[in-house]
Image 1: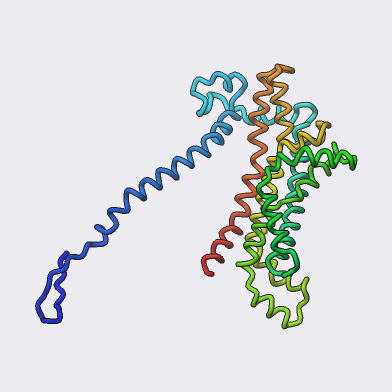
Image 2: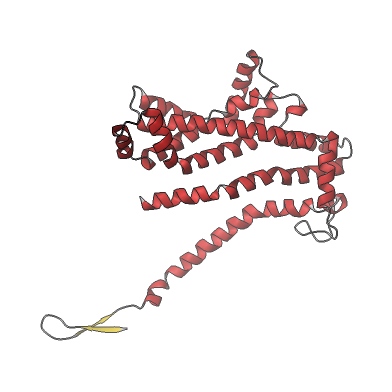
Length: 309
């Protein structure tokens, strides 16, 4: 499209201007590549879940030799029968494992979230001697793998005679350095100092300012830390494996590992145990999916608040 723009001398000079469609054309290959990359990620992460769902609907014979392939359903639908076999195995030991996982995840997740909120808010809004040094040590703890601390933790708890108890799993789960880091970063930006100063001028004390002013503003970060803590405790395998010896105290992760060991040794019918492992793995991820879907709105609210700032 040609536009005539009159210069200072009065003579019109032609000037070309690209249309909006022409300007968007070079961006299409980049957008196409990004969409293909995202689709590939979705397939990569969803394919194991799809296989787990499909395999849970088959019987033992269909699990090892399905005529329609491993990624499609068999002729019969055996999910209900598989669930009955899972819950009836060894007098309902799987339900006990699920209950233990709920106990460890809720106690450890809620406890670590409370400590992370208090510590992160203190690091962000209180000026005390040694704050930067203490926070640097905390960041150093983030770099240490959790599995590297299991053996020292086992030695410590064994001297306190707490091994093979529920406290051996709950107490180490209360420490969440990464959660403290997230809460400090969010509290520094999401809770303005002006609001806290206004609350103090109105006569609010430290605790009232925290609970009535700062805590509602920290809700998106609290939900994030809570979900991360609950998922980490729910999926923890090495810590309860090292701390617990009584199978009745096992979480579902260690319980499924026990079934896998029995199936690998071909004890008690190896092929039937593999079916229990598949169905048990499917059931174990259902609470996490429900938690993410139910708390997703709080994440969206936090993103909206951040965009307005």
